[in-house]
Amino acid sequence: MKLGLGLPGPVRQVAGEAWASRTHVEEISAVQFFRLSAELAALNASPRLLEVASRAVHDETRHRELCAELAQAYGVDPGPLARAPALAPAGLELFERCLYAAVAHCCVAETESMATLSTLVREAEPPEVRRALVAIARDEVEHAQLGWAIAAWAAKERSLSFLGRALPSMLEPGAGPLFRQAPPAADDGRLALHGVLPWSRRRQVFLSAFEEVLIPGWGRFGIDGAAAREWLRRKG
Amino acid sequence: MATKKRHRLFELLVVGGGLWVATGCGGELTRQDPQQQPSTGVRRVLPDGGVPDGGEGGDEPSVGYGSGFW
Image 1: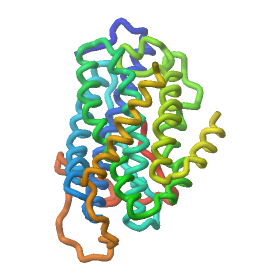
Image 2: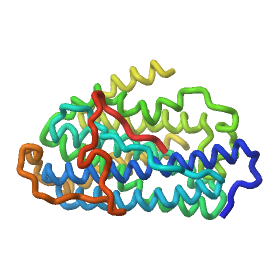
Image 3: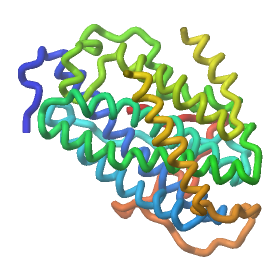
Image 4: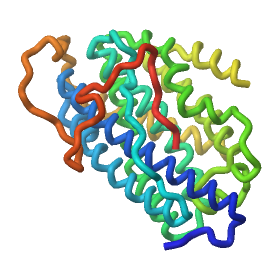
């Protein structure tokens, strides 16, 4: 399968690299869900939460394959997997480690994925790309909901306020690069037809999700967004 | 239009996730840390048969980290 042959070379390369990057994001995500499911089990979470976290490991493994096929279709080999680091800083107890991972991975990254996917699904043109986006979005809804469900569950018994100061660390790896200058090919409007948001639109989608989903979502469960706002102000 | 869509995302994800718990799908939070408990000897594996880098927990960073974005 070859896609995007009508695109200028640098733009097709950006599309391929985006799908290759997603291949790694999905593979790392499978590892993060694997760890999260073990932590949830240790915290005596309900079968429903455990089932969704465990299923997410398999979902993300499937997504990795879809993304890798599309990367290759746009002429880019995803290459070997990058290392999947633990998310929470050293020294946290189990409850804090689990909540850090749930918020960083599900509430932040998976919610951002849904904001991006819900935009892309309407614009992508090649049937192979549309099918992959729809299949991935169907699962990512549940992955993001899992994070907010874990926050709701945990906030019933303990304060989650300790997470407020950690929000910049959670945001930086995914959102930080959006505030750097991108090459012109990365902002080409035709990318959206191939399942990739042009750079400036990625930033807009993130900023909207930040204000309208993340900030009120954190606030709902007692996580102060002030440090995240300060991080964003410094990016601006 | 865009604002309306994003409000729907809040309802779908944040409110929707919270509803799982409101309808009894949370569980009773334990206070025990399994690192202080004897190992069960069960080794969790990924679908491809591998185990995560760094074993169960990976190397913990000195400051927190976040997941990559789509």
